[in-house]
Structures are given as C-alpha cells and as structure tokens.
Amino acid sequence: MHVFAANLSSPTYQTQGPTWEPYYSAKAAYGSLLTPPVTDPHAELTPAVWSRIIDLFNSNDTVFQQYIDRKQRGWEYAACEGTCKVDEICQLGSAQSQFACLQASPAMRKAKRDTAESGSGHADECGTSFIRGVLTGHMS
Image (cartoon, rainbow, N blue to C red; front, side, top):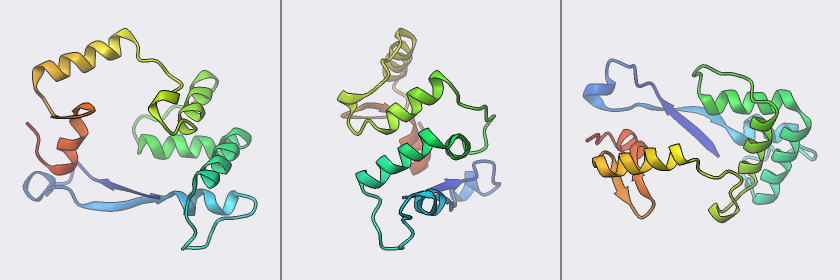
C-alpha cells in the first residue's frame, strides 16, 4: 500500500490542481519490523500481513504512534493512547462495516444529514463524500 499526498497550500494547486507525491509505503514502514520480515517488493500485503501489523501496533507503541502521525499527515498530532488506541486498532481489524467497532454518535449522524441536505459534495450509494471533490478537483 502506498499513500500519496498533495500540498493544498501550493500556489499551483488552484490553477493546475493537485500534484500527488508519495507520502509513505506501508510495506517500507512496517514490513521490516515483522517476524518474518515482509520486504520483497512483489510480496502482497495480505489480510494475514495486516493482522501481523496490527499485532505489531499492539506490542510496539512507538510504531503505533508513528502510524497515527502518518495518518494525521502532520496536522496537530497528539498521542493516541488508552481508548483512542483500542478503538483505532479495533477499526484497523474491522474489514467490513458490519464489524465496525465504533457507533456513530447523534452529532455525527446529524452532521452527515446536514451535509447531505445542503447538497455539498458528490452523493453516491454510500452518501455524501466531501473528499471525492477534493481528490478530483471538482468542488461544488
């Protein structure tokens, strides 16, 4: 898995759109830390490998906090400990929405409904998606 990022503050973003650059590779970040290591460029990150990565996060808080830092992409990073860590690791192990660990709060449901009713974003079978507009450069 490779994660790419675009600098939304770039002067060319508004005129030419995003310039996507590699942010990190999950295999490069975690593969060498697994036992046995997963470093072969052709090795797939299978569910079994992801399970081992989750085990690594459980046993090595430094690696887990590096994951959280990458997930935040440099935004006001705060350590994810206690319930935050338990919930995050649970979500990582939930491959399908019916096995989700967290329940939407009333505020989350209201925010989603308000966004859908306002017509912002692009609706699809999953509801309103703001990020689709950011990624495609089609903001409404």
